[in-house]
Length: 124
Image (tube, rainbow, N blue to C red):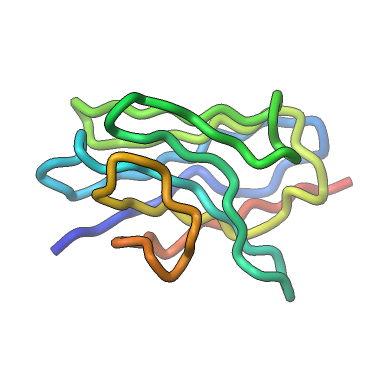
């Protein structure tokens, strides 16, 4: 049974930072591409950042480039999302996602596993 458990969300003022963690109970974690998505109230879930397992390639949505950084620790089955210079528009539930393909997957319906999410609220 694969589980993804996010942590690190909370309330922060604009300009502040948070680091999200996603602990994965996947035996072959190093062979899973890991993605972060977010869903703001009343909006669709959107891709935020991801890191592939095959090459370690990272990719970010334009709105977070230069502010967010995704990384992984294969020894501890954990993926991180460092979020700096947070804006009120970053307020959302952030979801961790895992897929066994060697590249990033952007189609929500195609992803193998999802966490339950962690809420990030950025106040102005």
